[in-house]
Structure formats: C-alpha cells, structure tokens
Length: 162
Image 1 (tube, helix red, strand yellow):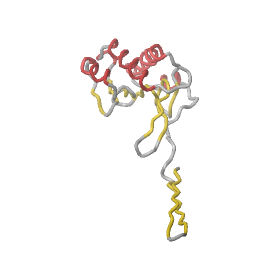
Image 2 (tube, rainbow, N blue to C red):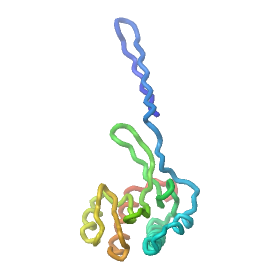
Image 3 (tube, rainbow, N blue to C red):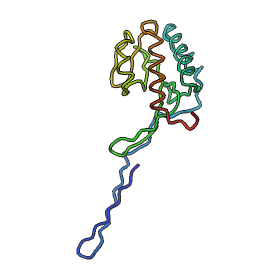
Image 4 (cartoon, one colour):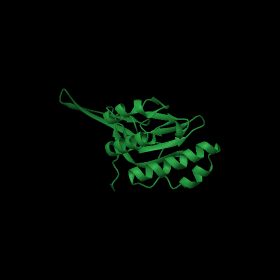
C-alpha cells in the first residue's frame, strides 16, 4: 500500500490531493516456519531430491546460515533488502533455490561482476534474468558454484546476524 499526499497553493488557498494505491502490496513469498526437511522429502524425482539436499548443505556451509523456507517452495539463506526506482521495496532471499519440475532454479547469483566472469566456466546451466537453471548438479563445477554463492551472499545479504 502507498499513500501520496500533495499540498498546492492556488490563489491563496490550499488544495489537498490524497491518492491511495491499493496495488502496492507486500511480497507474497515470505520466510515461514515450514520444515525444509519436509519440503525436501516431498521432491518426487530422486536425483533432483538428492541434488536439492546437496545444495542445501553446500549453501548452508558457504553462507553459514540455516536454511529457511520462503513461501511454499523456496529454500533461502540470508535476506536481501531491495528498493526499486519506483520506491517499491521488499525482502527476498540473499541466495536460495527451488526444486521445480524441469530444473532446480537458483536465485540471487546474478548481477555482480565476479559471477559474470565465473558463469561461463560453470558448465551446463543457462542464466536467465539472474536465475540459474540446473537440471543436474553433476553437470556443473561445484567449486565454481561455491564461489558464485559466496560472492553473491557477500553482496546481497542484509541479515541482522552476519
């Protein structure tokens, strides 16, 4: 929600305009108390489940953060506070991932110079708008992936406890 108030001087009088923007809502994907283990156990594809468990361990080790469920299907590590040019702001995972039907989608690895240089060395996944789509964890160089997670977490984490 956003409220805009304008005061104008018009021939000695004051005009007051109040605009209410109900479409300025908060994020729907928020951290919650859902069990990460329960989410992981619900992944049907065995290879993808094993990859998601490995990613959870790897990201927890690199970020030194416990995994937290965001919404119904994103495992996140740390918090990234953002503000758009429009003034809209919110919070999302600093780094995290979701096991989707076609691939594991990794969030938060784009938009920093260090990772742009590393992405070409990573291997098979494709980069779309800052998300990394990994069909199989064995298709990427995990040492490079670890470095990308570390770089992004350093740039994006706004958690109160470092």
